[in-house]
Length: 273
Ligand code: ATR
Image (tube, rainbow, N blue to C red):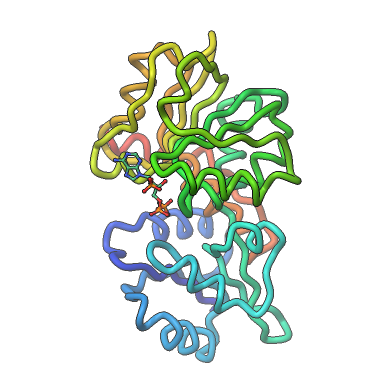
C-alpha cells in the first residue's frame, strides 16, 4: 500500500492526515497518511528512512521547509523560487522531487473558492519572510497590476522585491509609508497573527470591495481577520481554505487526481464553531 506522511515539529495539531484521508476516501485511493514529529536535526535521517522503506511522498511543515528544499534531488520552478518545499515525491527512478504548493493553494482558495480576482488588482502583502517568498511567484503569475510588500524590517522587503522583479510590478515599503495607498487585496503573511498581534496598519487602506486574507488560521478569528472586518472588507478570510488547497495540490502531484476541496473545507469549518 502506498504511504505518505507529514513531518514537522510540533506536529500534534496538524490537520494534514485528516485532510489527506478524506481526499483518499473521496477519490477511492488506497493509501496511508501519518504524522511524524521530526525536529530539524533529525530531518535527513527521518526522510532517508521514510523513502528507503518505500514511502511515496512527504509533506513538510514548520520548521522543515527549507531543509526539504535542500533535500530534494530536483525542484519544480515554483519551489526553486520559493526556496522552500512543502511536498516531496519519490519519482519512478527513485529521485526525490521537491514542490511547493502553498502559493497555488492560496491562489486557488482566493480565485476558485471565493471568486476573488487577482489579475489587474492592487495587492498588499504584509511580511517578507518565508511565507511571503512561498506565495510570490504564483500570485505574480495571475498578473496583478501591482504588488507592494510591506515589512517591519524594510530591507527584507527590498530584497524580495528585487529578487522577484522580473516576474511583475513589485514594490517594497515599510508600514508607515502605506498611508495614502489603497489596495484591492491585503494578504497577511507575517507571523504576528500567531501571537494575536497586528502590524501597525493605517486606516483607509482598503478600496471599495477590497478583501483581506490571513495565511494563518485558528478556531477563532485571527487579529488580522478581525481588522479586515472592522475595515469593512468584502471578505476577511483566514488560511483554512489555503491549507486544504495546498493539500489538494500535493495530492494531485502524488496521485494524479484532483480531489474536490469544498466538502473538506466545509467539514473543517463546521468543526470550528
Ligand atoms: P514565516 O516563515 O512565517 O514567513 P519568518 O520567515 O520568520 O516566518 O518571517 C516572519 C515575518 O513576520 C517577517 O516578515 C516579520 O517581520 P521582520 O522581518 O521585521 O521580523 C513578520 N513579523 C513577525 N512578528 C511581527 C509583528 N509583531 N509585527 C509585524 N511583523 C511581524
